[in-house]
Length: 413
Image 1 (tube, rainbow, N blue to C red):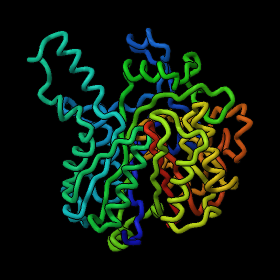
Image 2 (cartoon, rainbow, N blue to C red):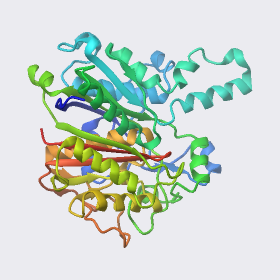
Image 3 (tube, rainbow, N blue to C red):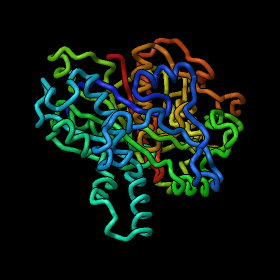
Image 4 (cartoon, rainbow, N blue to C red):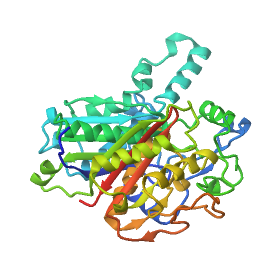
């Protein structure tokens, strides 16, 4: 790999906090929660009846005819990618992509679960009405590469369209792949990130059966409690987050605004368990150490960490152990999942956006609901309110079922 500098020139998101990236960031700094009670009939029978659903329905941004061909995860990926594309200064459609050669434009957008809502809905139709009533759009709506493919088609990308799937580490790994694609010389610009939309009774029932989710059904806004003694699991969320990654000299040549430098990435695997993280955090610590070497920066330069911290009893403290081993106790942590819930395959990408905005604004967003910190939490956390501070470098951690560990490092441009 070359040592080509890669920068972030565009961001886009649709989340439980807002329908765009600036609104999401503003809500994070204000400490708002996107979690709420599920009001659908099917939720009444579930042990978990809360989730962090989108603040803005995608049907408000995509016309009815087009929506019929899109799974919800595909629709929101298109919304976030469109925002990021325009934010980077490339216009609103592929016809406005001045300064980008389509053969030097790639896409790396992943989903942890894919088009599950389509699969489940079309199976209901099959069972109730027979095969002739199944939508002809079913397969492209449910295929895991669907979001990446739609983004690639919308932007006219011809340097490759890629879709990784590494559970809750997906969005971060998609960004790491984008970094590698540019460094390898395959593209000048990569549109990268993650998407997920699976708020449905089956995934909720499955996660609940694992005892992975919070059961604070009467207090959803306070249910996601990273590092708190009373944490009892994560809150399922939905959303999409996309970044425009660009070769630094390409961005400079067109006078692009730069949010941050994408300095490095580290990917490892635990080899421990299909759902439980290594409680010692050794795989995660190796990922962080690898990212530091890749970025060629010292651990002491990392002043802020946007932690994976999902609010699970084991996972939160395994990450703390990893941070101690790889960085020490000097960074200021935050867990934005306390506000957004856990967006699964989109989580790492959304937290990467929060990381670059933290650098831009010199501010750490708060961790809400941290009322009684766990005794093992021996690193400083920006609890309850944002923290103003100089941030030369941010670490963004993401971990996923299967033992996936991804560490991303962003620095001031």
